[in-house]
Image (cartoon, rainbow, N blue to C red; front, side, top):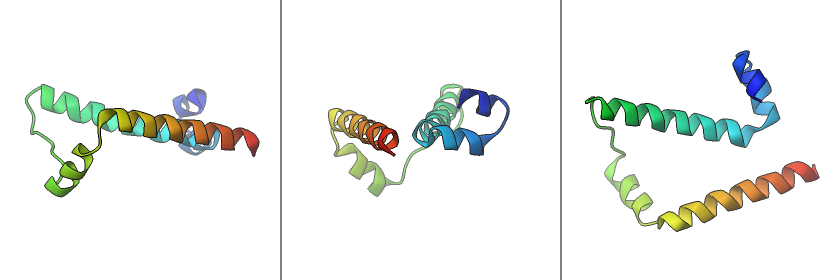
Amino acid sequence: MGEALLHGDVAAAFGFNPLALVGLAILGVLGVVWVVEAVGGPAFRLPRPLSERLRRVHPMQWLVICLLVALVYTVVRNLL
């Protein structure tokens, strides 16, 4: 997947590992938002209803959800 991304072939990278590609994209967006805020740019905030719903979920639950998604994806991908 890394070689495909280095050559700019996003479709091939998605074919190799879509979960990792989506995760990298999300981390990239979050990183850019963080840097913009850190250098004094405008603060980015989610809409209040969405923010309140996301805050109700405990961080440990987010970790368990992400690990379960990764585990299920890995098992299903290797079985098919």
